[in-house]
Image 1 (cartoon, rainbow, N blue to C red):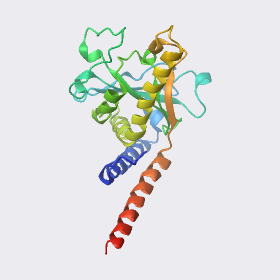
Image 2 (cartoon, rainbow, N blue to C red):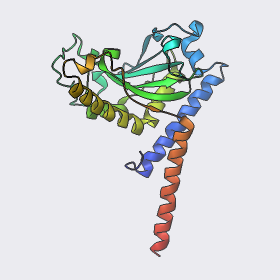
Image 3 (cartoon, rainbow, N blue to C red):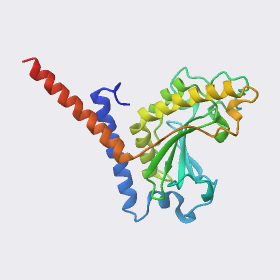
Image 4 (cartoon, rainbow, N blue to C red):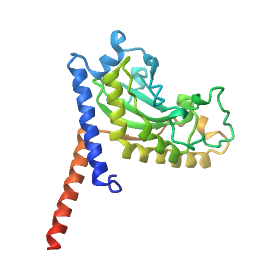
Length: 247
């Protein structure tokens, strides 16, 4: 996963992991878990509602997120709820346009043509345990090709004072940290949807209720961080051996 990254890029990922930890520790000092902090007085929450109400939106970066939970009987084992993360067009890199799908209809407000980037599932304490992409019908998003959605990942940053600044910093750092894995899941998303379209030609694949989660991967923050450290150590060791061989 990290082969294409430079040592500098890996070091940046390691810093993002520290930011994730710092934000989680800041919330823990309130005596509440990340989930309790998110849901506030409504904990343990109501299925399908957005938390916080009205979502969190950064008018400068045009990044947006909310957290919600499904009915308990429908949740995967170990999952309490999940974040949905988005980027709106005014925050996208120049030149990116919605995919030219046959049923695309531009919204009245061009900035409403938002792209869903990734969903981040957590346990009851807010520890991330799964990343996944969803089909278009799930969030009602505008569809963007994988290459364009991947190009948006570096633009996701929520830096607002209200209502949940620590959570906003946490989810922003987490998406940056998990960027390489998220990019692979977005690429897999398009590959699977194309295969689904070929296998089910009679129905619009993007609106097919039989396909909800399109790609997914388990995510253990401790193991992911350890993988980054191991790759940095491997490269340092390889560089040392090369230096010795050149003497």
